[in-house]
Amino acid sequence: MPEYKLVISGNRELMGETHVSGGKNTSLAVVPAALLAESPCQLDNLPDIADMRVLVRILRHLGAKIDWKPDQKVMLADASSLTDTTVPFALSQRMRASYYFMGALLGRYGYARVGYPGGCDLGSRPIDQHLKGFRALGADIREEGGMIVLEGKLKGANVNFDMVTVGGTINVMLAAARAEGDTLMTNCAREPHIVDTANFLNRIGAHIRGAGTDTIRIRGVSRLGGAAYAVIPDQIETGTLMIAAAATRGDVTIRGCIPTHMEALTAKLLEMGVMVTSEDDVIGVKIKQGHRSIRLSTQEYPGFPTDLQQPMSALLTRAVGTSEVIENIFESRFKHLDEMRKMGAKAVINGRVAHIEGVPELHGAPVYAPDLRGGAALVIAGLMAQGTTEIYNPENIARGYEHLESKLNALGAQIRREPCQPEYNGDAVRV
Ligand code: EPU
Image 1 (cartoon, rainbow, N blue to C red):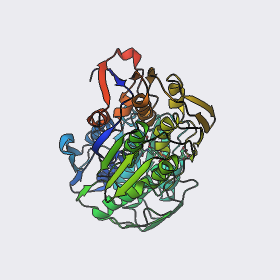
Image 2 (image 1 turned 60 degrees about the vertical axis):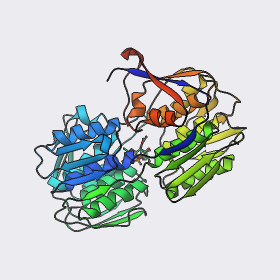
Image 3 (image 1 turned 180 degrees about the vertical axis):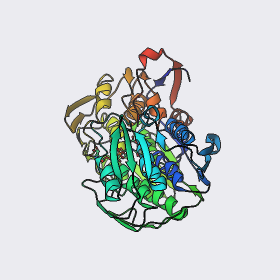
């Protein structure tokens, strides 16, 4: 694909209806989980995002037969006979979710050789808790030539996480699903995609109870079969669209979402004076006047998601008053605010705390998408701004949002792709 930049003509209200795609972070767990199945699986509602293409490359490298039709959102994944148990660094470093191949391959074969994962640069992102869980299950773990080698016949065990980790919870669940005996996982993360991954595993024959609470109990089974499964809608895309609607003072109906997953965001938007309604799988967002500043603190689910902190802080750049945003999950997730200063935003960052003083107006400027959600935040800033915003390095956005520009354009935004010299885009960083 040729290099491009996004060019946004700002200051237009978003109006109309849109539909949420399948969840990114749930798909990035459920697809590797299909490696545990010895019969083909049909996975539905997968989003057409760049990270999925990397996943497919990894699966094919391992010998799985993958028939993915992104336009029909469906994938047939046949991992009945894999030919390799190594995920090379060249592929693993392209995305964060490559860490799930450790749990899936270890659970299936008792052996995995996986390069270190990549991911958005949000500060230090260790995987010590994943490895601690695998060790508790009986895996021997060593590093060989920069690769992590995990080996051992797994037996159920007690795993208590030292901190709440989404990836760690899912990864240990994958490894334990086919371990011999019972596993008790405590201090688990409770995100919706943990429940979704557990539901998929149970559909193919696993025995997992308690996902969505901080205690997960797994009775290991010797074999997992195939099944059809549709992943849940994307919580973070839903939130990004809700924030974009509020930011442009629009009136948008978002269909195909799960409103209960959005309670933390909805509460904050209501506090700001945004009108949010919900019914069944539909959320409506509209705003008539200016919105108020708030205090916001990111937490594990069901708290306010770190992945929406960045889009939300774009909205806060135009709130009345000064907002305080505390980022509790990642040590460095405010790079988008540095970019927004070029657009007239007023933000003071002090470690994990940002103070954002609302301004009456943002103006367009050339900016650089520092990471996935930071890129989405810049799109929202561009929609609000007077004049034209150019977003460089937009590949970061395409990694995790399905057709974001066309969805926003269908609501009245004016976003176009223009060719751009590769040297202006730099290296895309990974989610
Ligand atoms: N942590 C450790 N040790 C570990 C694991 C995590 O110290 O072994 C720390 C992390 O450094 C971080 C905190 O614990 O400070 C939480 O990390 P977590 O493991 O929950 O996050 P993750 O698995 O690396 C996933 C999503 C992120 C999302 C976070 C939090 C995927 C592929 N990534 O990352 O998604 O922000 O959970 O919800 O599912 C995104 O979509 O933009 C994105 C970054």
